[in-house]
Every structure is written in C-alpha cells, then in structure tokens.
Amino acid sequence: MASLVIAAPLGGLHRGWARVRSTSGQVRFGAGILAIYALLAVIGPWVTPYNPTTQLVANPYEGPSWSHPFGTDNFGRDVFSRVLAGERLMVVECVLAAAIATVAGLLLGIVAAYVGRTFDTLLMRCVELILSFPSLILSMLILAAIGDNSLVVILVVAGLFVAPITLVIRGAAQAVVNEDYVTAARLRGENRFSIAVREILPNVLPTVYVEFSLHAGFAAILISGLSFLGFGPAPPSPNWGLMIQEGSAFVSAAPWSVLGPALGLAGLVVGLSIFTEGIGKQVGEGTLFEARI
Amino acid sequence: MRYVWRLVGSRLALGVLTILFASFAIFWLVELLPGNAATAILGRGATAHQIATLSAQLHLGESPVHRYLTWLIAFLQGNWGVSIAAQRPVRQYVLPALRHSLLLAGTALVIYVPLSLGLGMLMAVLRQRRSIRFLSAFVVLTSAIPEFVFGIFFLIVFTVELPWFPPLANLQSGMSFGQYVHTLALPALTLAIVMSSYAARMMQANLVAVLDSEYVRMAVLKGLPRWRVVLRHAVPNALGPAMRVTVLNIAWVVGSIVLVENIFNYPGIGTLMVQSISLHDFPVVEAITLIMAVTYILANLAADVLAAVFDPRLRK
Image (cartoon, rainbow over all chains, first blue to last red; front, side):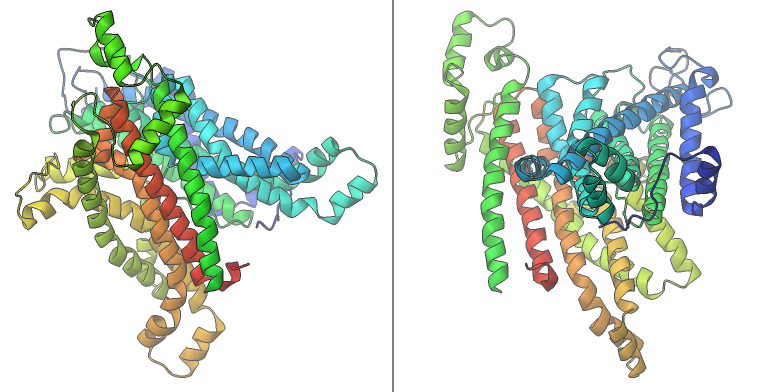
C-alpha cells in the first residue's frame, strides 16, 4: 500500500509554512482553484447582485449582458446570482458529506485494523455489500424511500462513502499495526486508545487527506447528479443539479442558464481532482481521479 | 488454470449471495417508498373497498418476508408482475427499454475500445512530444468532468448552436441504420468519452511502466523496429489491466447510463426507472434495480477473474 512518507504531525506555524513550500506545483494549482471556490462561498451573499429567487418577469430568457452576466432564466431570475447561491450550497454539501464520511471511515478503519477478528470480518462483509451496488442507484432508492431534503441527501451520500473510505484506511492502518514502534508502545505499557491515537493515527493521516479530498469530489458529482434526476431540494432551490435539469427544458431558448451551473460544477470537480492527484502523488499513492460515481 | 476455476467458483458463490442480499435490500427499500401502495395507485378518491381489493391483489396483508419470497420466486420464473402505472406486465414494459439501453451501451463500447486503446498508446509512446503532453493534460481534464456535464455541453453545442443532431434521442421502430446512428451518436459519445478518458490514462500508465522495463530495452537494443517493439513486446503486457478497467467501466455504465439517458430523454431503463420512482410504480422499480444490480455485480466479478487471469501474482 502506501509508503507513508509524510508523517503529518500538527506542528507549529513555521512547520506548516515549510509544508506549503514543499508542495508540488500541481497541489498549489489545485489548491488555488479550491481557494477561489471557498472564497466565493464565504463572500457570496455580499457580491450576489440580485436575489436568486426573485422573478423579474419583465425579462425572461435574456442573454448575457453587463447587468446579467449569465443572462436570465425562464422566470427572469438572474442566473449569475443563482449560480453563486448554488455554489455556496454545493461547497457546504460536498465538504460536509466528505467530512462525515471520512471521520466515520477513519474510526471504523483503524478499529478494524487494530482489533481485527470478528469485528473486522463483519465490517468487511458490510463494506463489500455496499460496494456491490452502484452508488447512484442505491442512493436514488434510499432517497425515494426516506425523503430527500438537503440534509438527508448529505447523510445518505456520506453513509455510502463510509464503505470505500473504511476499506482504504483499514489497509493503511494494517500496514502500520505490525511496525516496531507500535510493538514498542505496547511493551511500554501504553493502552490501546493511546496507541491508536498517537502511533497509528498520525501515520494514516496522509491517506485520510487524500480520501477526504477524493470523496469531496465524488460527493459534488453524486449530489448534483441526484438533484439533476430530481432527488434533492425542490425548486426554487438554486442547487446546481436542479438548475441544469430545469434549464435543459428550455435549453434552446436560454443555453446560458445551463452553462453557468455546468461550468461551475466542472471547475469545482476539476480543481478537486488536480488537488487530490497532487497530494496523492506526494504521499506516495497513485490516486487517479475519475469522475464516476 | 485450476486456480482460475477455483476463483471463478468462489467468486460466483459470493456473487449469488450478494445478488440475493441485493434483491432483499431492493425489495425492502421499495416497500419503504412513502404511502401505502394501494392508496398511491388508486389516488385519494378511492373507496375503502377498492383499496382492500387492490391490497389483497398486491398481497399487502401478508408478512414482508413472505411477500419477498413470493416476489423473488415469481421473478425468477419470469413473472415480473404488472406495472401499476401502465397496467401492463412489467416484462413487456421493461424489456424493450432494456434493449434500448443495451444498444446505447453497446454503441458506446464500440466507440470506447479503439478510442481508449489508441489514446493510451499515443500518450505513452510519444509522451515526450509537446503536442502529446497537451493531449494528456486534456485527457486528465476530461476524466474529471462528470458525464452529465458532458452531456449538457454536447446538448448545447450539437443540438442548439449547431443543430446537427436531434435534441431528443427518440428511437422508433422501423428506423434505418443511418437514423439509428444519428439518434444514438450524442448519448453514446457522452458515455464513451467518460469511459475512455480514465481507461486511456490507465493504459498510458501501464504502458509507460512496460516501456521502461529491461526487456523492452533489450528488444530495442536487438535492433527491432519501434512499432514491432511497441506492438509485440509492450502492448500485450499492458493489456491485462486495460481489460480489467474495461470490465469495471461496464459496471460503471450501469450508474452513468441513468444520467445520460435522462439528459437526452433516451427511452432506456434509466429514464424508465426515474419515471417509475416518481409514479410509485414499485414492480417496475424492483425489476429495473435488480437487473442493474446483477449487471454491476457480475461485471465486478468478471473484473476480479480477469485480473487473476492476467496477473499470476494475484493467484494465491
């Protein structure tokens, strides 16, 4: 598995800066794109020119202009404002889903590798079962069964991603549990919790970063794909997937209303993929990002 | 070869178990769909008598396990039930859609194989050239863009701005071969590009590793022509992983075909599934999901077996 080059302790500030300087150009390029998205998500409400749900009935299907950079849609809503509002939603949704999945996968993976035995076997059977379904189909069924507001979508997507993350982190932790320093800690009389937190955790952290960033990208694709198919918040939510779906009905009258959210989504996923593959290379994992869910 | 057969046997057994579990999960999830099925079908104006009759017809009074077993056995016998929305046998409804989807996936595969192999070889053999580096960067970019974003771009460029293709991929019986190609082109191309970009990158990575190996250098030093070194010595050793990726791609298509069909309103099982979920048409949803799950599981199984066939180191 991974050759764990970077042990990532929570070091001081100068150490952090040294880490930033040692990153590859690819990581910095990806991080730059992501920084723009993060910034827009934070300042979005202050730079949004119009209310994203206000209908300016006087001018529907208006082409891009200085007052409406991405034009207006069938209800005369400003597409630029809607794309910005949707960007904020998207960033929050995919970061939340990936964070929940990564934390759960980290816990389960370390425990599975360290405790082993029956727990490990049972957990792996469950993981295999979840992985034997296409995630889009499975999440569609679950959302159809239990309802689909934004929070449920985030939780379902996070729940599905726990399986692959657990698998990878378990592998990384298994490579560590038999190392001499873990044995030494055990012989020193340290308890299992402190061994897990102080010896194993720091050594799987690089893998954790890669998995988080990878699954943030997958979450963006899956969540917007789901809302494109109608599983997610209802109109007039400025969700990108929903905007693409609504816009594709009048794509010949106002192609720009689809182009805005589509380009926004493509940019976000491309940024995440460049960043993921960059940090993957740096920690010695040849992660290839593929936009499929 | 014995290892391989043993592997096939054990994976097949596990696969059947997974499919059984999948069918149960599907049945259970679909049963959970909001609203009593009978009420959902008849609407709010139905009388109590009508609801009771339909409930009996759907065996809603019996225990879930009993209903599951009845459904599964009937499904295996080819009796897929009656569609609630269309009031027609599910098989008559699903099988034509499945044929359309297979046609679409097959067309995509026909585009995919030469595209990914060609791109992968080009990107590996000529990797020092600047134009090829641009091509590689473009392929990396392509592999990160989701399939429905691609579909939307194609829709805008090739049906709106340049109206070369029909915006709705509507198949009709009695279409000529040319009309079929014309209708299938955009959705199939969308699927093929998404599959190819990843496979081409895998092919490139593997081929570069092989090209850097000792025996390829040996072949070069023996004075063999370059095309012969690449085609006879390098490519066969990079094909194993490429085959595996291809089979995994078939598994992935099960998910992405739903999105692509919905973009182009293509009359396949993906479109039918989304419609049936919103109509609460349980028998149709169950049949389609089971077909998809079985395809996905079998493709993954085939990928594992292929990996073992092509890489003897995995045969433990």
